[in-house]
Image 1 (cartoon, rainbow, N blue to C red):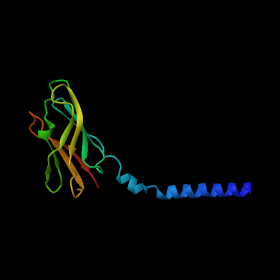
Image 2: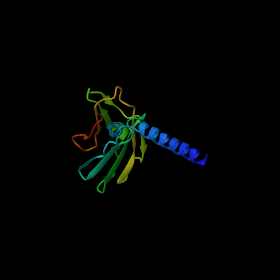
Image 3: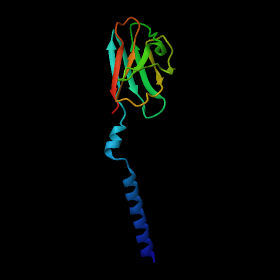
Image 4: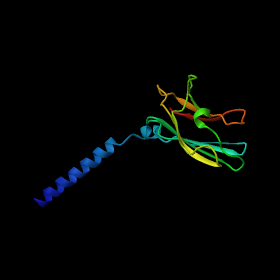
Length: 142
């Protein structure tokens, strides 16, 4: 009787383990959902680092860090940021949740509505005061 219970419990444990393994995402799916890398721009003694957060979520969020030791960071990212899609669409941010203008170190989250349908690539541009060209940060989504 004890032996049959032990065999039954072992069989159930093996069945559950196989079921869990069978439900795990395939490596290709897991790789497709891998986080997008940070991109960094260092010009005119100001470093800007942008890291996309989970772009499968709504809204889309980008962690932005600005660092310098030469002048205050007075950028209004709500006015100077734009998300571009390959079809030429320009998407303004919905919100900036982070440090206000000023200082030498700022960080926060730049929030956008998801681009629908999901494009194969995106580009975030930040036009900084006193810089001729916008800073560009690009990612492939597919």
